[in-house]
Image (cartoon, rainbow, N blue to C red; front, side, top):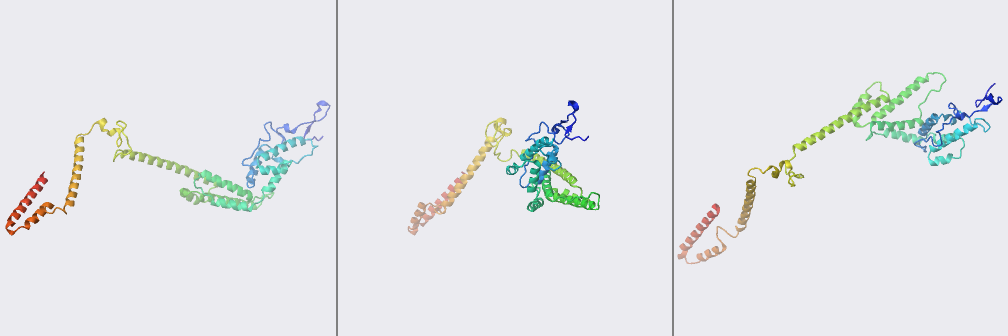
Length: 376
């Protein structure tokens, strides 16, 4: 006797079959855990008009983890209302519908809210957003070939590239062999995938900063070229070595600067320093005279310096005065003496000797005055 997969013989009550609920059987696709609810699954980032392929992958993983992807890929047909499994199927269908609604942006959710079956919602989204978009393919290729490391770390740069590669591959997947038996095209497809990997490796290396020139040259000289994961590991090791050497150099510079600052501390005028003992500026407590005592001849030296400065100033003033008076006083005669000399010269010739003697006496007296002034 053939049994229905949703019923078992319960011969305990006169042999009448008892229909079991498949949603309570852990091994069944209809099984729903007590913790599962409408908000149990929410994919981030949510579906937008430009990220269907990455969103679909995340959604497939989430539904597969719940053992519910068969409801949207057509593996489980939609039962009729009279089917014994309809109740269990409908419960799973509504859960999946809620999970998809939570994982799309609001305008898209409003467009699918009136669809009853989860498989119809899935197919609707696939038809609307999974079509090949050549404009987006062009944008992805430009972003991939224009992306540079700049201020990113190697890990961040590689992750950004990988996201773009995966999205582009969703639009332009690498061909696979669909033959039922092994054929000669398998080798060609394997070579095509290998060349695709080489292209990605070169793109990753050329996008690195100039500080990776050495490791980049070493990798590109290898034959055969390592796989992508090996190249990434080698570049990461170089980055760690570069950072450690840079930090060591920075610490050395800081130590050298501190030594230089201590070496030249106290030289010059000492601007910016204040003594903690006397409170005055331009020196520290280590060189404070009030704490450690004044050096010998400190007062005399300062007085001599002040006197020298004063004498230089007075000498400069006397020199200026002599220059200013040179136009009015010539050869030691004042204006009154000069007028008196003119009057004497105007007298008769008999008194010339008196004039000469007077001039001689005046000149000699002036010379004595100058000598007195010089020797003090």
